Length: 184
Length: 127
Image (tube, rainbow over all chains, first blue to last red; front, side, top):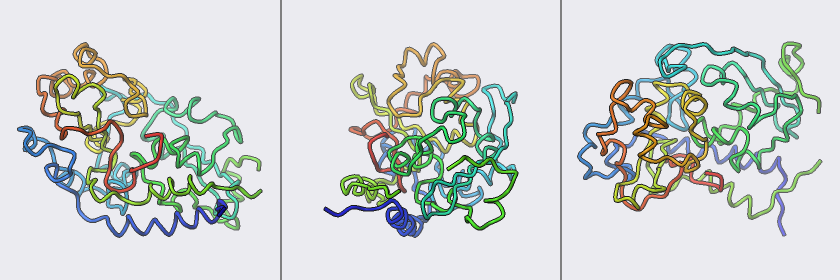
């Protein structure tokens, strides 16, 4: 029986990343997306994705919007609460995850995530706040656990390997004292 | 350590990467049809993209209490009318009110509850 090692699997994932990227073009109008009922009287009132998304920082995957960049550039200002007041605890520690076999290390930026959500979104349910305290694997992520709760469903998809696996083992970031490095 | 991926799981994983030709929903669209069609209404299509322009994730998923798994929140129109879930905003003050049935109940008949999306969300199990 053929078996696939994790490195080979990751290679397959990266190759496959080119497929959706090449298919990404424009946005489907609601009446053509095979989800909305074209005979619904509200269809002409609801906003088409293209109108809202085409003016935001572009991307090649997901919504074809680089949401983090759109936020940084001030193109969007999503509220932090229903009424709009922001009283959120801020946390900007980067975490470098080194247990990645022969793939580049993963750099997890708390700041980018914290700009979208409060700590309670992930802690202590999806992730324990303990370094090396979470048995994360790509198989679990692809199964919709850990990072895969959002990435692959609404945050950028799991075909974008190098956005997370972004740190070469030889780089200065890998050895940076500013990074929190879980033990291997 | 050499980790082994079973072929069956690999097939599942590759399915994630193959966009379904028939699915052109916008990435992150959620179909909610746990009860709608059973109650004689069209399925709900919830556009994540529209809402994340206006609200950060934790407003809905922490403050209001929407679970991060489609179909797991147990939403009913009664709850919405009482100001819970969608009704926390869709009350005629923050956003348009629930009298506009067709704005949400806009899906074609027969859709299954789950996260949709034309790019990469066509599998596997969790969603």
